[in-house]
Length: 82
Image 1: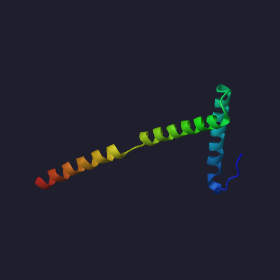
Image 2: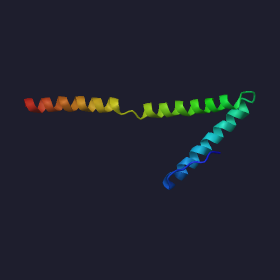
Image 3: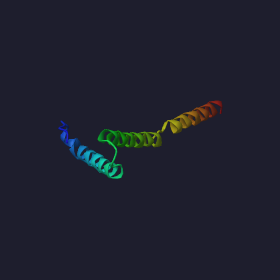
């Protein structure tokens, strides 16, 4: 348990985040009983970090934005020539 100062509107999300951390910590503790608490915390942090990166990659719109820009340029060139 750690004291935090947060905005009131973030409270629900912060509580859910703490709940998710607790769930994963308990699962790792149960599965890896002979592993030190520091290593378990590191494993949980790694898992959250990996999931965060996977979500960022899944939501990357850059390839689509680049393609739309390319197609827009093609259309603009076509209409200028017509």
